[in-house]
Length: 61
Image 1 (tube, rainbow, N blue to C red):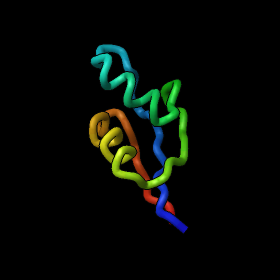
Image 2: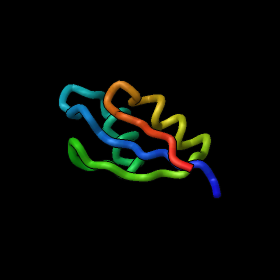
Image 3: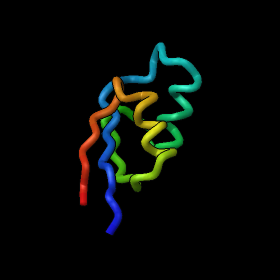
Image 4: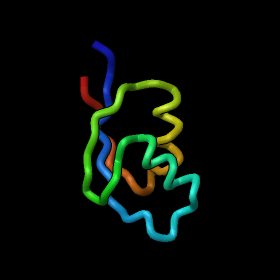
């Protein structure tokens, strides 16, 4: 089974750039405190790194 990340949006998107808002939306997060499980891919890792200051990330197996 591939590695997965549990990603939770901890901070608001108010004041963020459009690129950061797009990265959060592509991860599948819509509102503050929403949580999704995403697969571990290079593209996903890049999106997480772009907005890491807004997220809480946990690794799942």
